[in-house]
Image 1: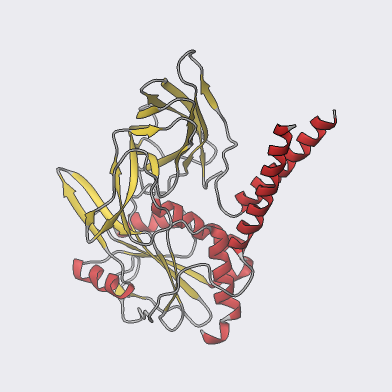
Image 2: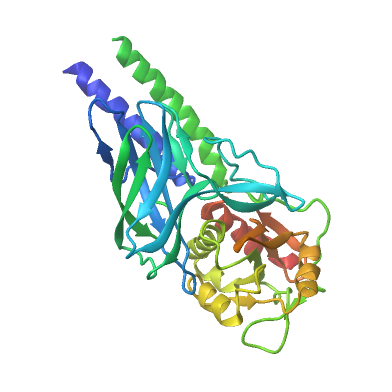
Length: 182
Length: 204
């Protein structure tokens, strides 16, 4: 009983710490979670998914999320229903120097997000997911780009996104549309 | 028992980490953004502004600041991330927000018409300047003053745009007083705006 209480107290301390960090601008990942459990296939967890409210006069959108896996796997495609957008692609922001891309496009490499240098967007055909290491798709790094939105993404709406992994197969998540990161 | 000890160690570590991170939104007079190492005056720049025949000059009235961003509307990631952060920063500073003006120069004027850029910016602010260069020379001239770069290339029908992610804050002397690199959050932006609009008021 004592030990249990103590653990709860420690848990609360940890939670407090995390909350404070979040206030400094880091994104939190406590949103909806979908787990694919086709034993003995790898367990993939997708969390914190959200799409940015699309500004007026544009038909482009972006989805962000975090992937965790208990096994090395590879994200190979993203898809949304044709009632949402004509196409979904995996994109990465990469720094550019003198108009020429110099970034490593090595799958799984994190992109810098605190860099004032010029950047551009590149489609990537896959991203490696390392066992036990969170893969974050976040502003300034990787994102799922939605092209030719059929209608604007409005705050509060939700749509389905299908992510396909080499080993875990298809994982479907509900993506809420938010103005800013949760 | 070992498990409990580990948790305790982790909790203590987390508390230290928290203390360290809290300082990221400091309450002192130091700007969170980047201060250009040498004076960068942009008062000679002019760019066509949607909705008016008078070109925009980058000099806000005394006591106000102008945030300038180089972007384009077919930009799903960097541009809306920064525009939302600016919008949220303005929300955090109350009445001071009325002294914050916003201008976006499109680096993709072939696709961003006056109307498109104006509608785009209206999604983020009720006070903005939609700037659409009428020639490549006009765009390059203003970029040169801000030391910004951009390019638009069409590779087999796929348009690739390169642009900087920085937002520039200009004071009423036409000087860039602070630059916000991509990823700076709204807390830091609000912190900088408060300093620039209150504590440094006499210098602007």
